Length: 269
Ligand SMILES: Cc1cc2nc3c(=O)[nH]c(=O)nc-3n(C[C@H](O)[C@H](O)[C@H](O)COP(=O)(O)O)c2cc1C
Image (spheres, protein in one colour):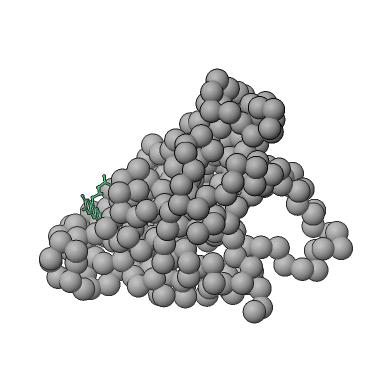
């Protein structure tokens, strides 16, 4: 499946975060970067062998140069801009559902989706099944080489109109509750503009869920103004039965729609 590009925009100027002007610096004769030398400045997905239907190099190179975003107040402003939804995914077995969640979100008219993943979450899904850009720690660190370079977690928090962390595992829940930001996902959340909605969908084993620290952490996140999409009871992947399973994908997508409608951000289909 082809990736739907997610140009990330900064202060009205088009900045394709993972491409930026580095491409012109490192481009070879063909206009597409070689895999040597200065190409270490390029994101990993441009350097690795292409797989799972990713676009041709030239197509990627072209897509890296986005057109400027029309400033509000222009003739285009009568049309609603696309709504940018950032999906955070952490190392719960419920991350298996990431492809389904993204696919269902993309069904909502006018939505652009990008994903931020933890390293552990990668274990549970195949990025080839996720038809949008998936950002991880490597991208954050490969992108920033010079003072003028964009900082990915800040670009992402600017780009996103809404964030939904699904699943939110016990580890990242605890980190977010206490302000720890040691990876791309937790940095985006730590820098989050709390005027924008952030939804979180806890998912963990029942024993973890029932530990008293969990309720404290969940309350802390709600105190920050974030919205819980509560977990549900079911037979869990580990065989235990009880509360702790991530809410169903349709519940999460329904909640995203509801919040966007409340903010009058949804396009009419
Ligand atoms: C197979 C497997 C399934 C797991 N499922 C969960 C889960 O559902 N919820 C949870 O909180 N932790 C779960 N964990 C533990 C997390 O993956 C672990 O705490 C990890 O450090 C989380 O890292 P992250 O928060 O950076 O993604 C699971 C671990 C394994 C090996």
